[in-house]
Image (cartoon, rainbow, N blue to C red; front, side):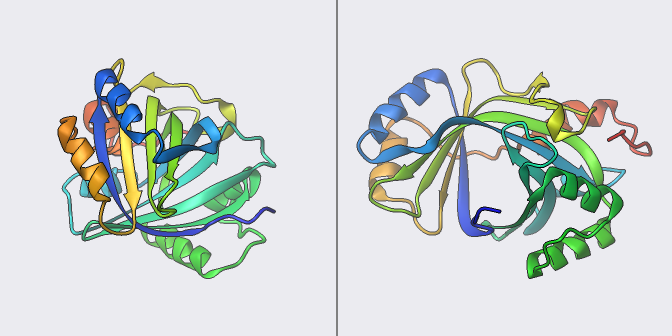
Length: 240
């Protein structure tokens, strides 16, 4: 299996852009940021939560510490393709992401049946604890099309643009296609700036000039607040 970065520690700032802001910002980034080798690609996720959505309900209350578990793939995977079981935590504004790569078949057996994968590492022990404590189940599928950029001057600076965010609460299987209900409005782009420290001055000044300011936006959180909370049976359980 290929080598992947499995531990991340960084600040993540989010911005919701309209089409005009997006076009103006891409001009500002020219010469400073380059699109990575994957170009525009689709990211697929299954978020795990408790029967009563305990994790996302706690998260949207903006606590000092929060955590979540998701299964992620890049593109629609087959059962033998590599996916990532990710444990993501946020403490005092700093995001800590730890993940373990395995095949989709292994990941499903691990998360749904608690069959241990061939891989063994400290991160897996942390995920084991999370699974034992919360007993989470698949709750929602969220996919989006992403353009990721990296700085030509600072290797630690990354900017991503997500569009066509869609979700579904049934058929929670990554291999069943990247389809779902629309979450973002037409012409909207969700931008994330990911950096381990302070933002470069040129970028901060450029965002201010364009009237682009950070805002809180959680894909899973918005999906829950605007859709799932109104239709979900908090005592029930969606089929995976």
